[in-house]
Amino acid sequence: MRLMSKTGPCLEQLNRKTALEVTNRITKLVGINFMDNIFMDVTREGFDLDLVDQLTIEEQNELLDELYSLSANETAIGREANNFYSVLLTQMKS
Image (tube, rainbow, N blue to C red; front, side):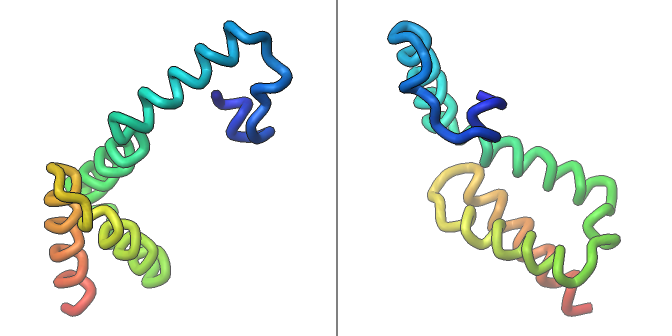
């Protein structure tokens, strides 16, 4: 999967069994919001360590954009993203 992130899809170059395994693995990762979970874990830790204060304005705005997008989800991740969005916005205004 790391290789595919660099080369792009390559299922046609894999044998059928391996292609099916890769497809199933990707489907499972998407289904559990794998990247959203990692993003929120890193964001949570960044807030806990007060690292967010050390981001540039541009980086803070990018983080706000990502948190805003995730906050649209009606899940625990969405609620947490909404909370972090509000906290970061308040910090930026002060």
